[in-house]
Each structure stands twice: as C-alpha cells, then as structure tokens.
Figure 1 (tube, rainbow, N blue to C red):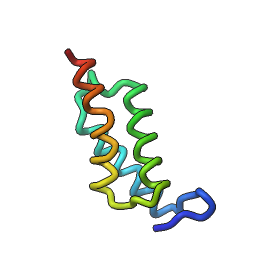
Figure 2: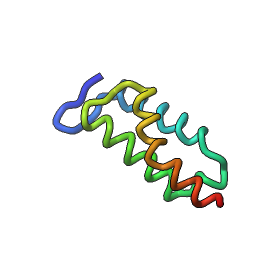
Figure 3: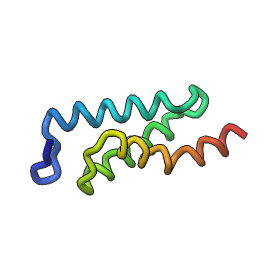
Length: 75
C-alpha cells in the first residue's frame, strides 16, 4: 500500500473504501447525512494522506471527529 505523488494505488483505495463503509455503518441512518458522509471521507483521506494506513486507526480517527457532531444532531 503506497502513494505516488498524492495518488493511492488500487489496493489502498479498496482498503480506504472499506474503512469508509465500516465508519458509515457505525452511525445511525439519521446521523448518516450527506454532510456526515463527506466528513468521514475527508477524515479518512486526511489520515491516509498523512501516512496512516491501518484500517482500524483510520476508522477510529474519522469517527472520533464526527461522532460528537452526530450525537449533537440527534439531541
């Protein structure tokens, strides 16, 4: 898994897609708005762009940022 000038190889892209799908499943349908999906994707790509390629860490990184927002929206 690697990047070449900011582009991810197909294997890494498949892993990132899986991380995104798993992160989406961690939220309720009401929380999973288009805006929330964008935030998850941005966080995952940011983490990967900074060199983090562990799927569990990427998912956690994405959710830690957005879950408090999702909880406020649900209240």
